[in-house]
Length: 394
Ligand SMILES: *Cc1c(COP(=O)(O)O)cnc(C)c1O
Picture (spheres, rainbow, N blue to C red):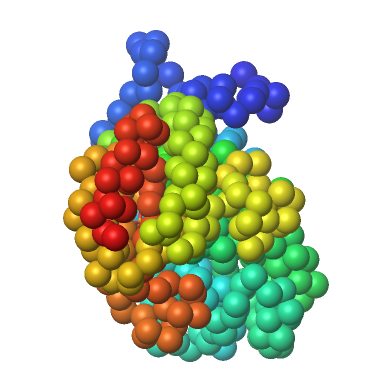
């Protein structure tokens, strides 16, 4: 069955399905550690790679394979490996090909643990890095050294939803023979295709929109087959960050509804962003679907939709931000996002508390900054919840 001409929604439901002899409708969960061989000769042939088949679930598993194949079809990638969490995917994508003496350039607006890998872990193994304002292409250029091997960025970035010109950074990477790794979590596979824009590797935390219902963690690294064979394949087999079959099954179910969930949540987020922009208690709204987004022209070039997330500042700093969060009745306080349930985060005191105040300011995170992840509730209910809470904060 060819999946090449399928549109996104068909791909999200069917691609990669591997039906057993029972002909089950829903994907089976192959909750097994290993696999048996009919003969000693068959075992030998499988280990030599002369015969296809599974060997051990740390290497590959049929349920996990279905998830990887479906993600490859959605992303337009040749191959993938899925991991226990988004961070395991980021760590694998960065570490598998780097060595002591290499240099990495990364955008400074990164998920906190990604910054820890680059700023704290990699130097222990002799890998140096430079963090830049990723929205300024000339800063990437200036940071390049003779030993620069890898570029890393997240777009839209957490929590201020700043956008990086992926094509421009990919062009620079190609000109010096470096590879560009893009963390595409905020855009989802629906709204941005980094590989088509020239990126070499894409990573996801599947924990977010791909599950979308707050159940399990997961991650995935997607790229061309040659890079995976050369760098990721053995790293993955021998360090063992592989996804569990049960989580792969949950995430396959998540993919079936990803397009309708993300479109619905984005539609609500767009309405709520416009609603917030009208409110006197709100100092600023950043939303990748509004014409006043600082990088609106790049969004038009590289994204096909807005976001399920909104970043906004309430007037009155931390005190007002806390009163606002505490007064919400439907939207819940959580550092997570991409869920069916609407969630609000105060980055300065939670996800970004480890950064200095100066570093937070550079990223545009102030004491009144809030990140709202819009869920599947009725948008009108969410707006009245927000309206009441803004009243309490004022
Ligand atoms: C959540 C997140 C991660 C980490 O994913 P986990 O599944 O929590 O390990 C990495 N990058 C971004 C942009 C994220 O939002």
